[in-house]
Length: 269
Ligand SMILES: Cc1ncc(C[n+]2csc(CCOP(=O)(O)OP(=O)(O)O)c2C)c(N)n1
Ligand code: SF4
Image (cartoon, rainbow, N blue to C red; front, side, top):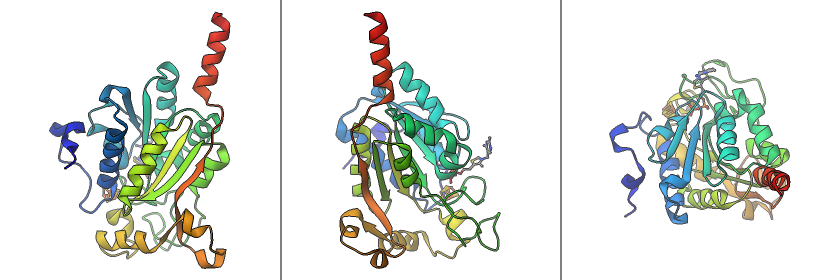
């Protein structure tokens, strides 16, 4: 049995997450991925913003920073620039990373700085009671859209790809084993690596949108998703509104911190 306790600050438990929240599955998948790579705790620095998902950094026994709303990417960038040996992992929500932090998200991907971003996409602002986020689908209900959201939503994996990320994967908490693999690959990849994780929020999103129980929401992930390998041979009509999961981008390109090091080395030679 995997020893999760080894990586947890047990004195910080119990978790604040609601029963049925998907965030715990992401936490466990991350810990297994880090363990499989064999990283020492001191080699990892985990940085989060503000939100239910961002509370994760309080529970793990790595170097951690629980920062301000929307600014996880900026703190992480500073840490990576100052100490490139650290594996800097950003834990952030869809609101944290793509609403208030949207500009930082785009530019971190553009720089292709060596960060691993685990983006918890629950389609809503969970912590503050269910306001519309940039990933709330059209027509879905939120506390700020009681009659249904009338805005289009971001494809946040597509956004990272368009901005220049080296690695982009999308997974679900239902497919926890695959999720662990994507996180492991993302950590090992040099450059900006995004893992978008679809994680159910039964409290602020599911209840309002009649998605049933937490288990029903997991089953919806199973039925509503399609692996990139399967989708490759299907028409757009066959794919319909299914969500594509898997590794979407895996490219080698210049990475910001290494390019900066070349400048330092040139000046010192
Ligand atoms: C500058 C600032 N603006 C607004 C807030 C209030 N706030 C806290 S968390 C949050 C949204 C969290 O949503 P998300 O990032 O999607 O995380 P989740 O709670 O769903 O995991 C907001 C608006 C804040 N803490 N700071
Ligand atoms: S409000 Fe939603 S995201 Fe926050 S802990 Fe509860 S279920 Fe999870």
